[in-house]
Length: 423
Image (cartoon, rainbow, N blue to C red; front, top):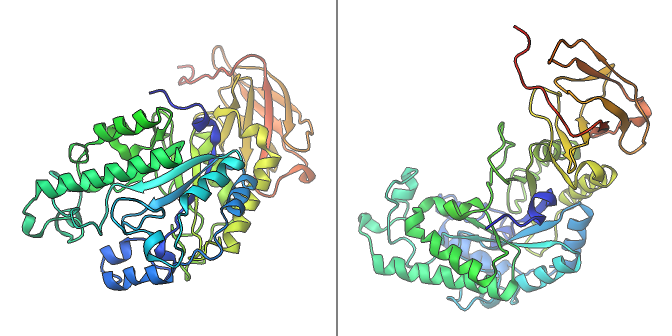
């Protein structure tokens, strides 16, 4: 299936890790898997999950102000606790928490009211399901996958019938998500604990696309994903095809009381610019408290990023990846018609900005936002090797505190020299 055209132009999505782990502020699922928290203590968080101030309309309005075009909510993490009234088992917030209601339907409705695409996260793995720890990965990626009691069968003795029951449970839950909430995107996780064949990824993909052929699937569907999903760090080389960087605002996916190490708005603008400059989307994660409120520090970051995006939207939406490394010392994007190049400058330019290997003459250079025109000229060059294009530095009054963007209108479509120079 070809990639849905909305995805590569979305540029920004918001990831939301919301679940019972916010009650005590412990790592989602991993805290009991690793033994940091006893399993019984982790599950007692069900009693404290109220969603008392859960306001999906406020979430959606915030995400729209941030400049996002989609959002992804954890419907069920590795702990197996579903945020909707699933018919598959009874481990869900409707039956076993004071929240006592489905949280997915109002979330999806609120996003659509804001014109945002609906993404749902779902973990293949379920460390609470009685049939999950029934088979072993044929080539375990690490020791835990082979030995952890929540993942592997005791003594390594496999139970294929139990595994078949688990797959039926997983497929039925995914079917509920597709039929009831019609997500635009399904964001899977937990795939490393079994092989593609054990997961029956082909059959699951066929099931999803039969229900909604326009569903976008991430790479954690393995061979059946539509785009790559690097995590917590901008890649040095862009993955082939569409991709998305998932990144936390602080150091945690879900809400953790002690984690105050929030990235600054300046850092987030830089992550965002570097990601879209390489042709990817940024999926920026927030972790609501158990009552459903997003911490003020995270709201502030989203709104700050959104303010910057609004002032530079021309260089964000409707663009593709810009210059390869080496042509300009910073990220860049390119208009869809390939005739306008946008240079991102993080530091205050002290003198001039240089571009190497640009064959096109430049018609006009302006500072995005103020619109101030800047002088430009070429020096050097020999034969097929173009000279360096030099652009005058903008005045201090035109410099953005987070990232200044210069718009270069080119004569013709972008044409780069990528050779080694004259021998």
